[in-house]
Length: 242
Length: 299
Image 1 (spheres, each protein chain N blue to C red):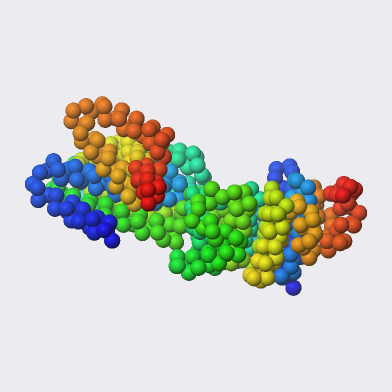
Image 2 (image 1 turned 120 degrees about the vertical axis):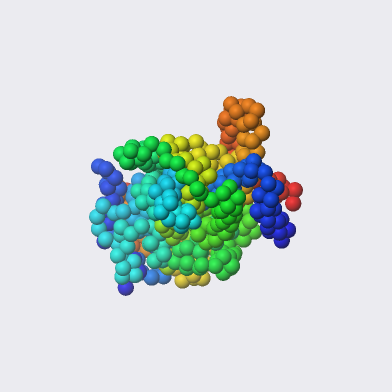
């Protein structure tokens, strides 16, 4: 059975249809890539799943339970955590506090500060931020902030993790590190992952399956090998070139 | 452990103030305790959650009005409690719609709601044929002072405790980025409403006590926006992130007021305005923020 099931999810902003009847099933433990040009509707899809935005139509089911239209904090407590493409750290708080507060709320809802900090340290180790724990989150580099997005989402104790371009703007070495980190996290925390990425090769290596969005519509879904040779994808997204 | 002991000693010393036998000194003490209680309460919603209320006088005025309505029908202590509860309930009623808007719109709304309530009270009083009410035979100055001191201590402890709690952590996250806070499971709407209601209760009780002190109730005066402005000024000058801030801010402005008021009353208003501007521009985290930063650098 699917952990996440999206059926004909649609989002209109005024006259613009950002997402047009997109359906997909996500198997537990899988990593699914979401590909598409700017404005294809990738982040909108995440926002609908995570409850940041309310769908104009369709239904989203997580672990047998309808989640579309629920507020973001409820969705998070049910076990879906997202990162933001444009990073949104709690800038004035330390890195540790950013992560600890997520552990105190989220699906884990650890009431006491002490145990929440234990989780926070563990997550910071896993994301390679432990040595920057006492630094203000606002003073991190971009790569650091991207990691903090992941750490904060992880600290909530999700079953489904939505990663929105956590590798964008990183150097080749940083991308390689991030890839290793994501694979490690999936095993360690028994996660199901949806990942939006522009870095094509990264996506191909990481994912079990890839869905391709184009102007708000889903145009292809399949294994990385299938996607790489899918005529419509090659035409629309890869531009027939690389 | 030195700080709690020092604070306990300060509270004992403050409680002993009436023994000096100077009504003038007790009057200043009362005023200081009042501003500490008001500003600490304001910090809960505006300092921690970052929702700046420019209408906190509405809770103070509500408490005062409850006292006026209960006057000589119920014991004063009961009316003080009722004033606090009424203010809290009003905050829940206002907060539910108002806390949905963020930023400058929220600031303006709180100001507007306070003005609205003020004129409602003015009109109710007018319809009742009451133009100003006199409250004679209330508790003496010492008793009022001790009650107010109790509220100041309670408000300070409340701010201190909330700041270090899970609840406070959630509020700070909302201040830093509300969407990100919701994305990590923080129920922002619920937490903001709780903080807003909590920030109203003590001001309601403060208003109920202060109207006994002035022995006179006139809605335009009791609901004056100057009270709200002063709270904000004290929080900005002292710092609004934690309990010490309001202590610094209130002490600073009360002392300044007392020194200038008798000699140069118009200079006080100018000085207050100039200080507010200076702090916003050069030390937005206030006296307490500056001190913490200095301690962090040196230690």
